[in-house]
Image 1 (cartoon, one colour):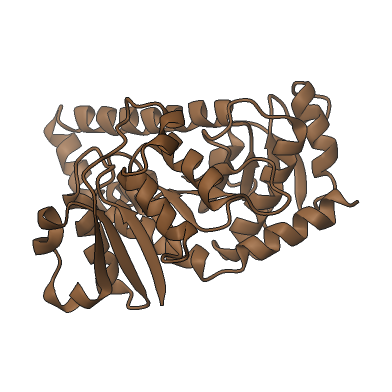
Image 2 (cartoon, rainbow, N blue to C red; image 1 turned 120 degrees about the vertical axis):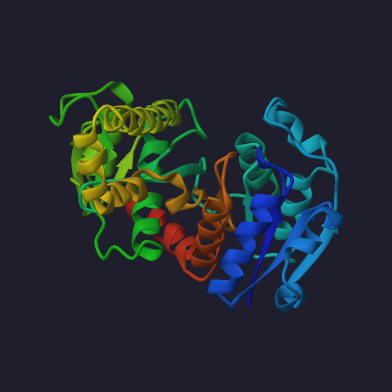
Length: 330
């Protein structure tokens, strides 16, 4: 039975949507338990009696807010993020889920749980919608400055996650650049290109459009570029949705057309809704760490919990260590 430590204080909307998401997950899956770190009396009434034997609590009322520095997280030993991470470190929980300060979660996980042997820097990966399915992009914020070796490691970790957790038999890996040609890119990506050629399913450089057109399964970049790309994608999705709504209200014909295309719009919404993908895994640490969006609703938390369970029940850490050793030795 997998046990997940959940920081219920970190989300922008408070504890309720986080606990609501946990309840949704428990209705679907019976193979996990949860340790909730936060104020018990605020949420205990939200959990149905039939799930109470699967939920325990660690009392805490200190939360690392979005305005706090990530570097201060190690000093805040009574914070919900620190305590939840420590439950994983001590072996009382198998995985960690939080919608709180991503930098704090990353710092605590890296320093308290520790890195997988061979990993220089962990990376935050996120799932992006494509025409044919999804793609995995990393790093999207953990490391704003990367060298070629970091990008090489990201490529290996991303491929393993796509195979072991997402179930893609032979994931295609691309290096994000400003052109497909081998000669394109900056000095770091050019050097990384040479290293990534050791990976059998490496397809070479890919451009920004390839993130969404399904050209490859894993897209590798540094955290500076990845985070800007992620926020830009979120903004574009919101803008397109807003424009569609504005134009649909302008005439009876548009409204009629919208009614007829309800299923199309519903499918489109599902594709661009971050809640459908849950959270972003921090790859490269010794235990599953899932970082959810600060504005996560119950559906997003449910899917973040599902991710934590999937990673916990996979052999991803062993596979990452073995593949790093194999490809670095070439």
